[in-house]
Length: 222
Image (cartoon, rainbow, N blue to C red; front, side, top):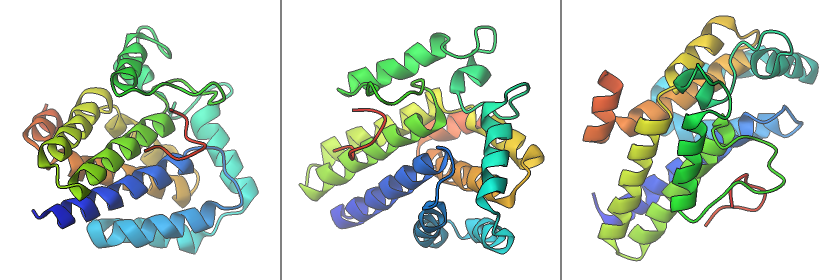
């Protein structure tokens, strides 16, 4: 892989992670544009995701339908279908804000980051973790752009380690949405998230083993 290929690849992954992260926040009017931007990046890299984007377009849900499905899937209030917090899956005895949550925050702190005061979400919320992946990919692209292969590989390994150790819950999370979402939008979003993370893990030995067995303003970590 040439330096330019690494710069381009890491930059595209970074943007995909950013767009995915934003998609898991409450629905808003700019969501359709966001998904089209994501499709433009993801489909060339992962052709299997084209079917999910097409299903989203054909469905064309109303904002009311999206808000209703989002609330039922991620908020509850009585039975949250797919809690968007890693600790629910990785640390079920303690639930949200368990030991796995602290472990995720340690990753952020070790990278010189922390949750911003106005975030309002736990460190292991799906959007926050995806934003952290965006940050690591940006760092990889920056190092490669400067010709620093050692640093670029360092941040590439950091991405792989973080996903393998802290985002293994993405499989169960996706399955819950796949089987119980009321809209093709959220089913497709979950499938695209899993596709990016799974292919990313598959690029490394640490990722294969686990499968078998600068930030932008407004980001949640700073």
